Structures are given as C-alpha cells and as structure tokens.
Amino acid sequence: MEDLIGEIRFRIPDICLRTTLIAGFPGETRDDVEELKDFLARQRFDRLGVFTYSHEEDTSGYALDDLLSQEEKEARAQEIMEFQQDISLEKNQAKIGREMKVLIDRKEAGRYLGRTEFDSVEVDNEVIVQTKKKLEPGDFVMVHITKAYDYDLEGELLS
Image 1: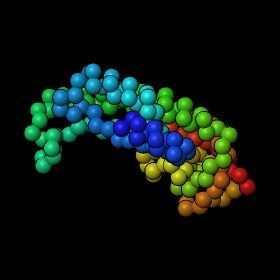
Image 2 (image 1 turned 120 degrees about the vertical axis):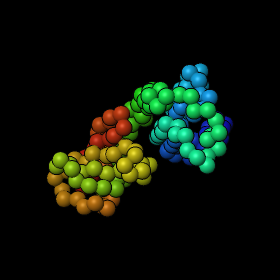
Image 3 (image 1 turned 90 degrees about the vertical axis):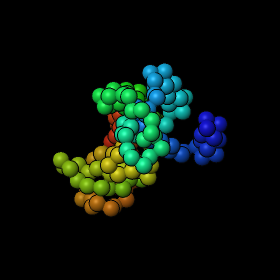
Image 4 (image 1 turned 60 degrees about the vertical axis):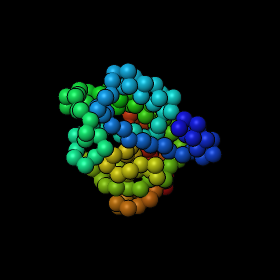
C-alpha cells in the first residue's frame, strides 16, 4: 500500500489524500496503535478521520469479542487524532502564501467560511475568508492564504 501511495503522490504532486480509521477494533493492541501512528507519520495524510469500533450485527466483526471499553476506544481515537494534528498543522502552514479557490458555505460571526476543493463539508478544514465584500453561499472566490491553524486556514479575498 505504501508503494501505491508513493506512486500516486509522484504522478499527482498536488493530490490531497485522506483516509478514515477505526479505533478499538476487536483484537487491537497498544502495539497496533503505535504501529498505526508510525504508518501515519510516514504517509502524512492530508485529511484523517477516526471512528470508534461499534459492535454491530450483520458485520464481519460482530462475531469477534469486543473486549475494549468504550472509554478506551475513545481514548485511542483521540490519541490518533492528536497525533494527526501536528501533521495537519504542518501541511496547512505550507499553504500560507498560496492562492486557493474557495467555495463559500456560510457567513458566521461577521466572517465568511468556505472550503477548498480538497475539503468535504462539515468534516474537513474550513477557510476563514476576510473581506468587506458581500459574498453568498455557493460563490467561488480566490483567496490568498495568510494564516494556518491545526485544521483550518485563513485568508484574504483576492478582488
């Protein structure tokens, strides 16, 4: 899999790669969590989601013993997201100074919030757009990125 990810990044240098993980799957050990963090450190995904395992009927994992407490599953999910936070911040900081096309989603607290072509609504980065110009949800605008946060960007509207 790592070779495939490398090949994709080689062929499409500006690609945004995302993945979603399950924390606390039956049989998961502390060593598995550490191995996963090592994998994430090497692959440096642009976007990452983590859900906790839930024991659901009619799934392949249902027959397995679900031995971890919900609290442990949530702690592992949080640990993985905290690990990803530094990666996300670094990747966002690399966008400072770039011009990005942003889809405006809404106005909130006197500022506009949108997302780039790389971001899914409600789960990924938002772009805070600074402008006095009136914008509407659904507008596409070009934004000069001036600040980066763990999971969001901020920028100024270009004309």
